[in-house]
Image 1 (cartoon, rainbow, N blue to C red):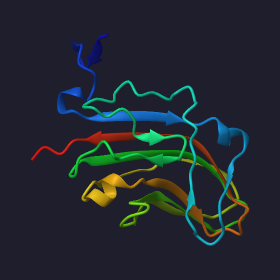
Image 2 (tube, helix red, strand yellow; image 1 turned 135 degrees about the vertical axis):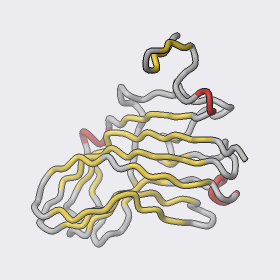
Image 3 (cartoon, one colour; image 1 turned 30 degrees about the vertical axis):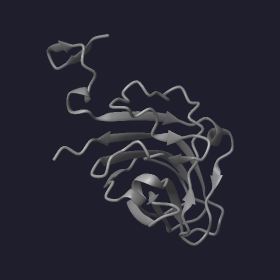
Image 4 (cartoon, rainbow, N blue to C red; image 1 turned 90 degrees about the vertical axis):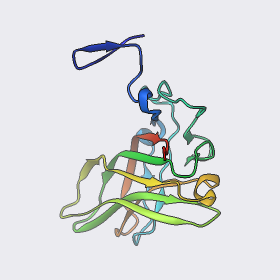
Length: 179
């Protein structure tokens, strides 16, 4: 296979030169049955069955075979090294049921160990509406607790429990630490 980067043709996949791995996972289930978001800005973990057309692991390398576990609906960081950088793009469609609804999208890491939360995006939606959002964020695998315990992506609103979210998919990329 050859790739075109600008005017150059190469057989090296994008990101391969620096060891970056990425996995794209797309969902089909929440298009049929959206996830109801818990009221009161409580994080509701997002699910993704990884059965959508855009799901692919072509660009995983360096011994990494999977970054998203579709059974547990968690990021699996166990094949990473301490110091690696993890970038995540969340692609969701959120339906708010009322006006002035606060929305937050982010990640909870180290679940079962030293747990931490990293918000990627927040906004206040002035009217009840349907909105597609694609925020990105990153974190560094700074400890064995972060690496050895799963991470989850979440959506939270301050609505009354009537807001819903459809997961379109996630893009997860890892850049290895090179001291």
